[in-house]
Amino acid sequence: MNEVAKIRLYQVDQKVHPKVILAACAGTLIEFYDFTVYGYLAVTIGRLFFPGGDTAAATLSALAVFAIAFFIRPIGGLIFGHLGDRLGRRNVLSITILLMGTATTVMGILPTYASVGIGATIAVVLLRLVQGAAAGGELGGALTYIAESVPARKRAFLTSFTQIGSHGSAALAAVVVAVVTSSVSQKQFLSWGWRIPLLIALPMAAVGLFIRMRLEDTPEFRAIQSEGRVARSPIMRTLSEGYPALFRIWGLVTLQVMSGYFCVTFLYIYFSQFLGFSAKSAYWATAIMVAIGISTLPLFGRLSDRWGRKPLLRSAAAGWLVLVYPVLMLMGTGSYGLALLGAVILFTLNCAYACPAFAVVTELLPTRFRYTGAALGINVPLALFGGSAPYLSAWLIEHTGSTRSPAFVIAAAALLSLFTTTKLPETAGRGLQA
Image 1: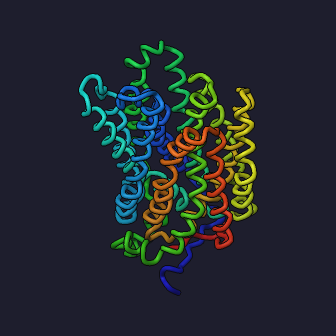
Image 2: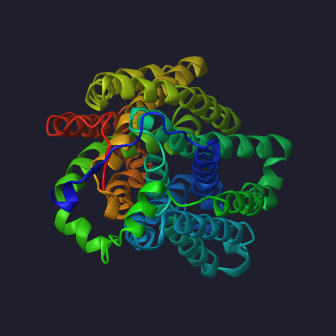
Image 3: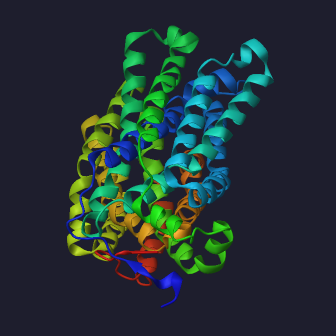
């Protein structure tokens, strides 16, 4: 049998140590808190670091910098994926959380444009690039770590905890910003309060680093390492052998990242600037939406493990296609309760799609270049569609005058996903490729 096609089946009674799940979930939560909190501070950062225009222009500038971090993510994914496939998953995941925490902390102590001029703006851009590179190595690595450490029959359920971490970071960031804005005046928040959510990154990163450094590497990686089958050039192997899987992953992940960042990043701006609710109401709406959504992730993971990946992927994608426009109409009625209900519906669809989608990412790739392939498979759509989703949504609303206009681009991504699932093998319950 060809080495690429070898399959290693997990024993059905394999036990998963809780610290494996804790390390992946907590580490991802901490790292993506650092990455996501910028989005909730975008309006404030726009005023402090991108002056010279009206509020809408400053916000668009800050969101453009938010998007820039995504364009560096594939490069970060290639670098850290290569290292993860060569040196091990644990070591690289420790490096990414250290980089992210450092960059976010430094951003929290930066002088503003009013103090040092254009240098402050440049510093924000550079720090976002560091955050983007670190984030590029995080999610693919965390998914790989859990997938290689758990039994096949529970893979979607247990990899869903990485999504609890990444999406939970949005709720945590929203709550932190909401508490700070509720505790200080608007003048105090603009003066120094905005720094608090960023400076919290330092102790959080220290905790995450401590947790990850206590882990062993995955059984799958240690097996190929002991057999001397670690890939010398994971990037070249990914591009030469893994390109069919990459195209399928890109087709699946596009809907996930576009809808996900529309929900967890843009909906705050949607509530506060386009629907007319207060900033505090927008923060709490985001936190409630994410908290309800992530509580469904283990359920959808169980369903994916029982029913298969493709049925849940198709159902969730069809839900986006059919519901996104009427739900945005519902949110635009002027009722805060209906707007919140609409946000919960959309984010629950996102969670239903995430569980099977990210399990499939790990199942389509072999161990020898799984980290690199997962990082590249996730981060290319993120670079093209995830980071730009908030900016594109704001731009569409500004230029069309319709708060429902973002529905069309998300519906297009749903159509792409439905097409991709027709080319997808069913991978639920199968052992991972070695």
